[in-house]
Image (cartoon, rainbow, N blue to C red; front, top):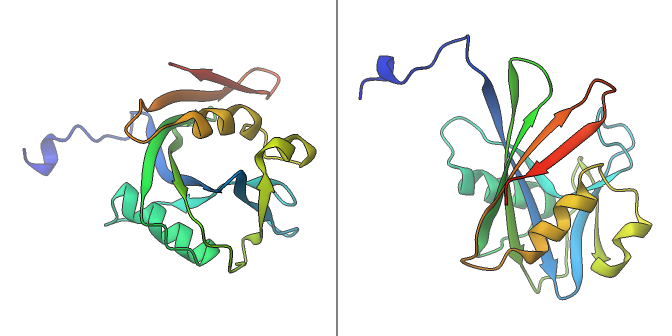
Length: 167
């Protein structure tokens, strides 16, 4: 199919592709506490991730982001979910959610923030990014070769985040 027949036009909803990675080590989950000067999610805990660059596939981008933000090379990252975020504009976010495991303990902090191995059963004690209390259990349940979850995030008229999982 020629490029011109791909159906790309400015009057369609578009997404910016991003990755979000959750790494476990035993009963601990690797999260990053956003740098206090970050524009978004300052001082909040989030998974690892970022934008998918032109020329990258989704998995390559996840591996690159993980390496850049943590110093970790995790042999197996598996896609466990896809989230479409509609912020009410013409362009939204397409979030590809990965999970992996490691036995490595040594981490390399980045300008994005401070990395911490947090016991899964203590996550509620930390200031998490707004969707993580709902998203993390889905990620942790994702088994190798298991079903991928799908979700849609949007904001209601009061600017509150709403989340709907298809499965």
